[in-house]
Amino acid sequence: CEADPASAARVLAFEPAAFWRKWAPSGVRFVYCSSGCVWDGPYRDDGGSFRGWDPPSPRSAHGHVRGLAEYLLGSVSKERLSILRPRLLFSPSLHPSNLLVRLLKYEKVIESPESMTSVAPVAKTIQALVAGGLFWRGEVWCCYNRCATTPFSLATVMSDKGMRAPPVPMTAAEEAALRPKRGHTVMRDAAFENVVKPPTVMDEAIAYIDRIKDQIRDR
Image (cartoon, rainbow, N blue to C red; front, side, top):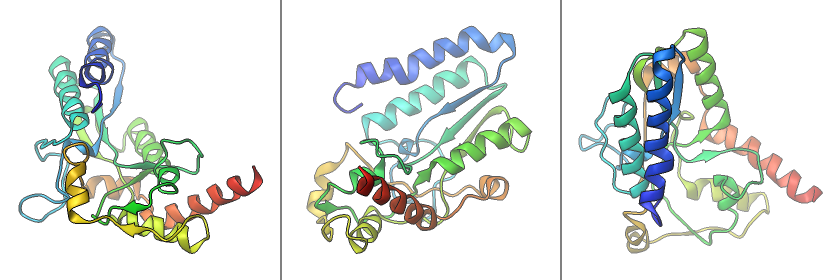
């Protein structure tokens, strides 16, 4: 997104909107996977966590593109539309885009708090939508694992398990140099937590880290 915002807007915003414009009249339901990057904090100005109804405040091109997509989709129709906002996706996969795999390579790691999302709450949220536990009127659902943590904490777990060298905290100046390419977001959605009951970040991350360690060992 940051390297080519125009292409990102076409793929992530204009094409989904064109799809929705074509199929909304047929009565289908549409789940759009957006991103918690539509906000930048890590907290709101009042110190609270971001909630689904808080207006977007993006800093990065990715956040702006996701915010544009949400606006365009809602302009077509909010009926039978749901928007999910996951943040820093992680899984037990060895795919290079997986947060946990990326953390194996970074010497310096950010200590700012972040909401993070594993595959489990995403799947459970979609199941809840299909089952009628959530709604289909253009609602925005923050989608995350409970108890925000820091990338540095996850890298430290990996170090303790012998998967990488001990992480070095990124300085404030180094972290500032990354912006506006990336921001920090901590989310909270009580309705989402009550229905989906997501696991905590650290519980699920540790389980996934162990699986990644086994896969690397068995290569």
